[in-house]
Image 1 (cartoon, rainbow, N blue to C red):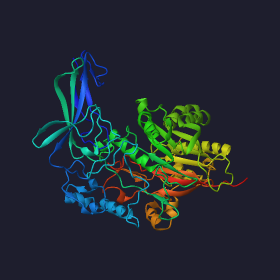
Image 2: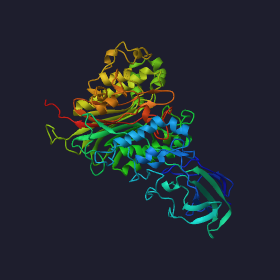
Image 3: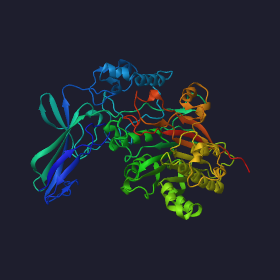
Image 4: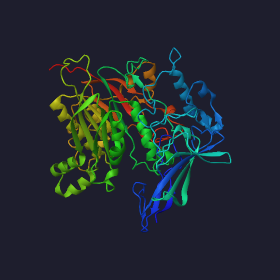
Length: 602
């Protein structure tokens, strides 16, 4: 007979808006063991599994610490209540907790104060204001219940549920009848109970005792401090919003580049400082989706997107928000694991803003094969391939703008845009390979530019700090022959050094922050490295902090109108690296608003 051997949860801390799916180990009638589901619609040997979820509600209301969500709150910041900050952020578990978090907590007060306009009305933030509309994720608060219309938890209505038991000051409410349950804001501070029992298909009667498991108290989904779009004009106004909440400025568009940290790399050994529940993929994927959707970018370039996560999650979820998806998975000559978990580059664009014209896929492994056949001696070919083949790829997409470009010299001409998205994931010691891959990509983009005279964006994680040889090649169009990184070239693939050039007029999108004037820009300038005109960091872990991610653009055809503000120490909790409960990647997102500029007549 069918029996349940084991029930456990991937994380015992449930979070609002994040699915809870228990792992079940079953024994079939033939004594084999399986983890496959046995629903009522497909009984096994006349039996199926019935699931129920309960919310255990105590007569005593429990508040959760905003810093340590597994701890019960003992004090509340009255300043948060006065500033109308979400009440869930006002709770702390101890005076020390509040004192340690003050540097971060104070920023909440500052943002709340700056979001009040002259009429005393709260001004809507452009980026980072997440809600449940369309995304299935709730912006939770202990002060009340968020809408749960987008959550489905089986055939049972969420609330009010049926009271199944009351004892010792506790009431059990049935809240779900499916294997998966998504906690809502009403569950915050309460323990959930999962129940699984084998049922006879013919009689619908249970067999034996149910298997149960209790969770910790449900916590609200931590949300980072919203990041604002800073106009380079230095004015305070962010521009009017269209009906979809985006900045409505004719002829401009926004581009997001973000390494989201593949689940296959997000190990507890590597990121031991991040709570296990915040490192789990069910939590991170929802948090990442909220963040990405909240930016409302017209073009989204993501790196480290697993093949299965693209197909099963990001493509369908972003499709709901009007995005068309394109993807290039890494090659698997080096990687020997499950092909579904190989990561790659994903580019999304809004269908109402752009249409797809053409796609180019760059496989650096193929370029390595061609290079070794021509430039490497026969005796060295195997060693050369072992050094050069790293499975990296680039996805190049040509789009056509659907919006008008005011001020263009030829308004009837098609406005094309080429967007390159790449992740140069190469070990630090292989400096020659990294330079070669960047150079190979740029030479390919040069060919496209020559054939189409098209504005270009080059986005991605280049794993190269400002001032490195790959960064110099991108930003300066050449590499100093005396650059120390050129000394690492055992295959002589970088010689002569004079060939390490390109003719694309590329400029880093964030460099204007280093030259900016005005109150808003001065604050961003303090987050820049003035020697390289790049952000102080885009990657922040316990072992490394520095800039690896960039958005480059062709300065003769595009201008930067505004930039997403950078993070600094006040935006991260004290002594916390990334990823964290608030930020679900070890990288930060970069976003720039561009305007097409008229091309000079030839």
